[in-house]
Structure formats: structure tokens, C-alpha cells
Amino acid sequence: MDLVLAERPALMATLHESHKRYHPDVKPSFGQTLVYGVEPMPAIIGRTIDRLNARIAGEDERWAPQYYPVATSSTEVIVDATGCVGICVETWMGLPEPRRIELQRLVVELLLDDLGVRPMA
Image 1 (tube, helix red, strand yellow):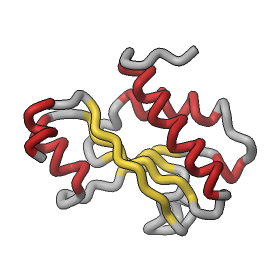
Image 2: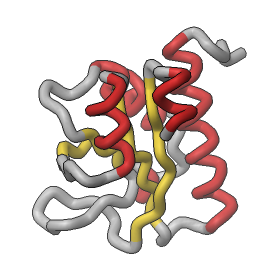
Image 3: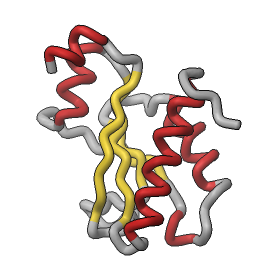
Image 4: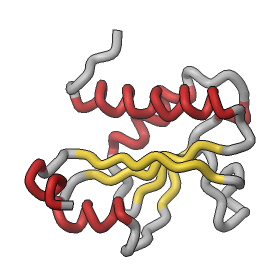
């Protein structure tokens, strides 16, 4: 936390995996979502989801935003302390592990691209 406070990032993304594929009627379910805890939804989430869904291999990989505030989560603690954008990246464990890793990496690359830190080719 000392490093985060010293660096004051513009964005904090944490990577997670979920046993349940996201469905709005199933609570809780998180797989294939970008989770955020503030309203309104940060614009970077919608842009990233659009770019992710343009690259999916099938409907099981489709991404969705999910508003799910948890004040004690590490991401939200950092958001409260720094004012940065916080995103929990949740892949679905029903996908093969190599694909989940690819998707997590893609999310990180797209977020960095959106911030202008690591432009994608």
C-alpha cells in the first residue's frame, strides 16, 4: 500500500477468476466481467468491454460490466485512498486456463492502451 500511495496510479486493475459465469439473474456471479464499485461506471470500462467483445472466440467469452461495490476489497480501498479508477477483472473458470490467461493479458493490454501507456499495434 505504501508503494501505491507513493505512485498514485491512474488505474488499479486486479485479476481474478470466478467459478460462476456472469448472468444478471445469478447473484453473485462474476465470470467474464469488469467489476467496478463507483457510479457512474468509469468510461474506460465500457470502451474496454467493447474492444474485448470484438475479439472473443465464442459467446462463453462475452464480457459485461458489473457494478458490485465492496468497501473492504483491496481495489476499493486503493480507489478510496488515491482517487484512481479501480477495476476487478474476472475471467470465468469454465474456459481453459491458457485462454483465461490470454484474456487477462488482453484486458491489461487494452487498459494500458486506453491510458496511452502501452499503445497496441
